[in-house]
Length: 475
Image 1 (tube, rainbow, N blue to C red):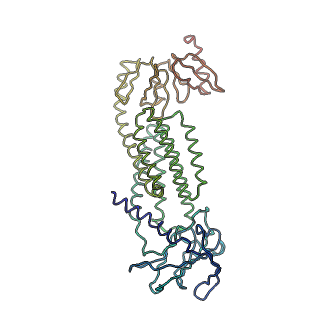
Image 2 (image 1 turned 90 degrees about the vertical axis):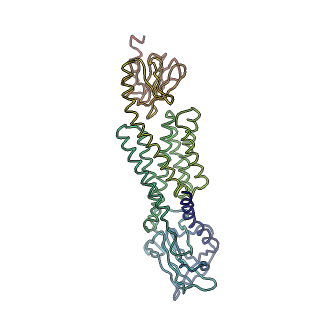
Image 3 (image 1 turned 180 degrees about the vertical axis):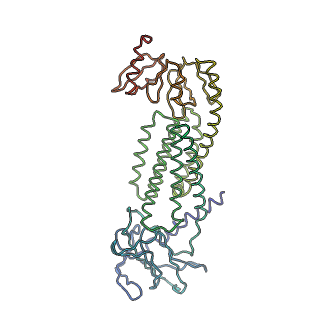
């Protein structure tokens, strides 16, 4: 496994190394005049910063040496531009047709390889001239030209990284389907979030593999980069939504709002690779902070969640390029598949536990049977101060400050609990036997309990709660 990962790392890092070698200060931008066999360049100046043909016509030249070895070589042009090239005054070929306007330009492919015949090489310096333009870009890119390099032909195969990306995409789509089925059965928010999260990661894996699947025209590259950033941003928001709903549901709205604002701000970062990596790291960082808070509260499942997210973040900080290109899909796959398996197992056990719970509830109607991490506990209804929804779970707030997580939905408990329990909010059921007062809070209200914090009353339930408190039995 480590050998495969090492090979993937080398393959994904090779274009970057070549780009750094060739697209340096040796490149010059020039003016051009027509010549007999090749254009004549003059008024050349060194290129400072990135090569950028967006919205203009650009003539470039540099000196190169033939790579050592007997393998055939080619000039590779990777970038959002049309291009044509010459070596030592002889034309190598064209990728589309560069021009001085959108009307005269024909869009080329994002990646092209122009093989170099051996007869064109000279023993000493060899002069490369590249003509570029980019008038059909959909969005403006900070680094539109990924590289102009002379390297062995053909380019190293991308079979391994593409195969890994497709494997991850298949697993993620399968997980999305599985959670979709679970959502159709249980209608839980976590199942829907995980189904969407897996589908988003699977789609991004497909988009990342697009370059290796077919040679698309360069205008598509801008749309592809925007799509990758949008999917990364969606993954970050969905990840935070799932983690906060599981471990800290009362803070769900402000934390999701914070995530949306932070992820949207990544659009201001330079380069789409940076935008994508920052969006992913924001989602991971906030999710890890929520998991750390859950560890502090000693909630079940918080420790493995924090450990996994910590490794995810560590890889992203150490190797940000691999995070966006490959490791993100593997980590996303490793994140959702165990959750899917655990959910399937839990569904099977839930059917058995439901029958047992119903039998016990019939025998002791004044108790609620709660399955905890330590076993099964029967909680007297009189000891329950309130029931607070936490997506797939509910939190039982008991007398003497105790709290228990119970694997049940709030809607089902509302039907099973005794008449002294009343739904005051979409996520709260209060035991009226523990109410000591009522106060208004704007257009809503709050129940003051004899233990613990006040409970919210939603505006549409306010009349029902007020009537219940004013009944003679409550006087």
